[in-house]
Length: 166
Image (cartoon, rainbow, N blue to C red; front, side, top):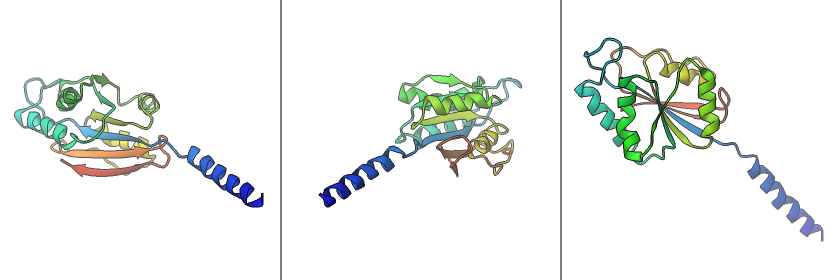
């Protein structure tokens, strides 16, 4: 009887520990690809940018993606369009200066993977917000190949970031 109680306690204890496992959400942050010169306020992608957008879709081809977000500019939307099209996903708009929108993304897609396109001065800020640190500075205007992968359990808590180029 004593061994039965100990066994039940241990099994029950492991189930309790398992139930407490955190939900990890992955956010893949990308700056828009190279922009053209057709419109100073809202340019299209240049030819190099279009190629980079295709490369992004190729780099993430084996990655499960639950949602794709972009600022409402042509250069950001067109950077993630090949990926979204390949997955049959709509591109959702967000405002990078509204941190509550980032929190809503995390809540809506908890446990999933999001791709979020932004700008040289917004992607690092989002990474800092998610990690609760100030490790990332604005990207140089000529730097288009950054890919930040942030895994987070709760904004600013227990988050880790990996900085890659593609």
